[in-house]
Image 1 (cartoon, one colour):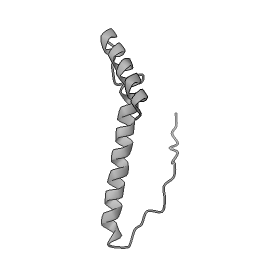
Image 2 (cartoon, rainbow, N blue to C red):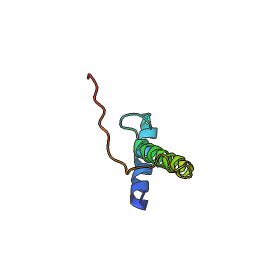
Image 3 (spheres, rainbow, N blue to C red):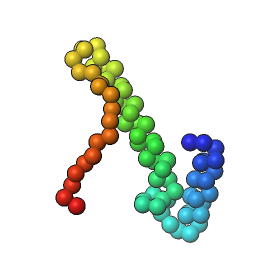
Image 4 (tube, rainbow, N blue to C red):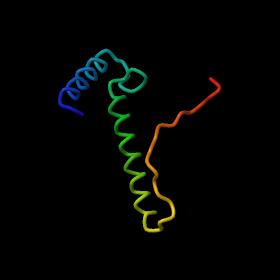
Length: 73
């Protein structure tokens, strides 16, 4: 997150807080930061998992790609 993005996030969070709007939720100020945190945490967990299985040489990561989930909606 750049300094400018951080300042914009702080400004939006303060505005939402002062007006009583939720900081989390669909249009919440913290949504981009939370999304980034979760993605980085999942990536780190995957890297850790794969480094553990590297010793066994049985299952290796073959790159990564986007997945599309189909639903009835």
